Length: 219
Length: 219
Image (cartoon, rainbow over all chains, first blue to last red):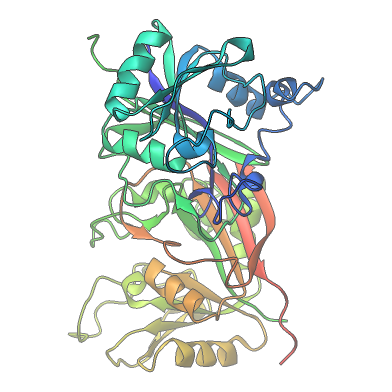
């Protein structure tokens, strides 16, 4: 059964998925890059960055699983880029260069229409102005029976959670204090939304927690 | 240099130091006992419970360190017991039976005066009605150069944090979702209060994070 899932989503132990003062230079906000100390050294991310090697073990297992079986992504506009308001032109093509790490259709939530943008390596960005349900419907269709991954950022994950549309969340709690920023779970009651912890594993740089809803009946 | 510290304080990954609906039967609130799964099996806690054995390793090291060098404790009234309002009599003597695990003077914050209560094993409960600074002053004097431990609960820790009176916090983040209850760090910015992470260690049941302020100059 295909899932709608959040994966490899890093959160500080004080609850923030991104730091304060997000900007072009610091897309994860002040201190936000520390959240991902568990991920960057892994073989999955080192391969993505075009390097050799990389670590294996628990962190790598979670990094690899986060990409496995994903047929489409959904991103909030802020995760796609720093441009606000109407698109001035087609110059901004995401944070990731010519070959983004998605290799699938990616549905970007925005209030401003824009033509699809095909990138190298199989990623095509589609800009969806009809809201989160419409984006999910298109992503499910595009995924062809594989999972849909909600990539973020925090506001996007919170919207999908509150709408009851996420089946599984893999969160990586990092031993980092950001003090402020975007709180992922503030006023969101995961058990009340049907989630329980189905897997946990700890490493030096993250406490990995997978929370999932009971399986839905086939639709 | 003696410290004022919080130690072995368990928090769910969604941020709660106690669950909802605290009661006589469930002093840690609904689900709250799960927070301490890392602590109960340790040699320190098993010894406290009068059992033999108990685990050694990282969790035990943190459990043992939480009691070492503590000369006095401070507790909020709710951590001392479920009685609210004026003390009807002297019947309630804490959650811990005849010989509480403190073995030091313990200063209980309350709005209602009560005579000190001497228990077996060296614990004496003192009831302080003059506020958190007065309690700390008395605890420091009683500790005789050893550390003062702020035992909790959440509201008490938050008061001392906001007043800038805590030097070190050892928090044990448990891979547990409570969904609601008493949020320990909501709207508290530890880095802005001067804290940084000085130690981290992970086990199956907790991500241990020690945050400390830069050492104070001798007073």
